[in-house]
Image (cartoon, rainbow over all chains, first blue to last red):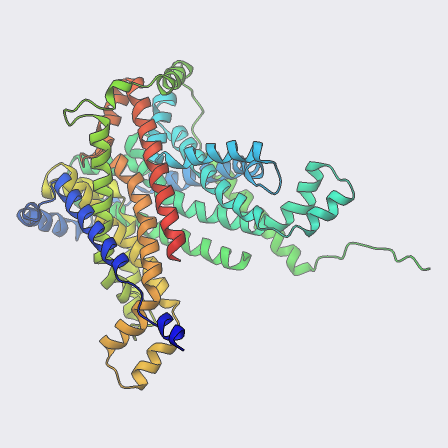
Length: 260
Length: 268
């Protein structure tokens, strides 16, 4: 009885207290480091107000010139995701520990981690330096980045598949490629498609900014508009991208619901 | 013994129609996407530049790691982390009212919570970089404007994910408390909050991981951190410098992901 009572006691508070103190120290140190003075924000409020007032009245005449860049952005995201998805298949197989031994999976995962650690915009900037301005570096950056995401999600899902078919096929002595084709692929195809759609949603948003470093798409317009401080046009771009993102997210969610 | 002839069962017509329909739609989108692609022109200097970049990554400029003048890699990396931390902190605090607003099991009128979701996704549509450019006009260039940009942008994602967490909770305790006669505030505090706190914290850590990545590039817009020196080094083709910064970013992001992943696994 006493033991039961002891287990009913409230959990110790020291840990929570320590966490709170640590968070506060980090908070204080970061605000000192970044010179985050609330006075700056307050004295900047009139500026913010004038920006918001301008943004509240979008420049509808700017809608037509941005149709092509918006479509380019979707194109970049689509082709990039497609390339990334194709590239991710072999990499994901190599990284799954129920298909290959440690000697293969550990290096494959190490490379995947490095790929995912580099921000997209930096990859795009590097590709712009190599290939010059335009959509090509944007597509390649998206493909590179998508490969990182899809491979990670895919190998994790390969590792959770039912091992029955794998064992059955090993027992009858099938070759590795045949084995993957008939025992692995049917089990992960639906989740693979779902991951590709999910990555496409992310990429549409990401592609919108790549033009800022010269990689094509609507980002070029963002840069131009911000350079001339044309906030009415900025708000047109934001609204146009909002509509595109909402439609694509909706279609993609509906498709993913049917898949799983 | 009778041997049964095993045949592959025929797929129903409707399923076949759906399959061929989706394949042809996919092919049409592919044609649309690839048709207006620009010609692939690779600059003559492409192979030279890529060799220079790889050379820079292999022989990074180690002297940049620490100089002690506030312009070195260590200092700027700490600043980047501080931007990400403070930005996440602000958004975690300010996303709470938004996530309640957008949760359809807390707010009785569906139109109202739907409006909350629209506001949140509108916030998410404005890229961090553009927000940073806007805040440069408000508070002047520097790390603080990076903090504000990340703080505001993250509210969009955290608010959406948190409101979905609230929608997933078990409504039993809430009903029990209102049956016992508690008011809205109290039943929220004792029946809703305990169910969502671990998920909230886990999502906040996840957003922190994303913000560390974002903070490394915000400098392009003049918002502090490692981004500005990175882009300067790229424009001046100082690949050794680019190499060391890239290495620094990879190491920092990997470390943060590792630590945050450990904590998140303990939380949920």
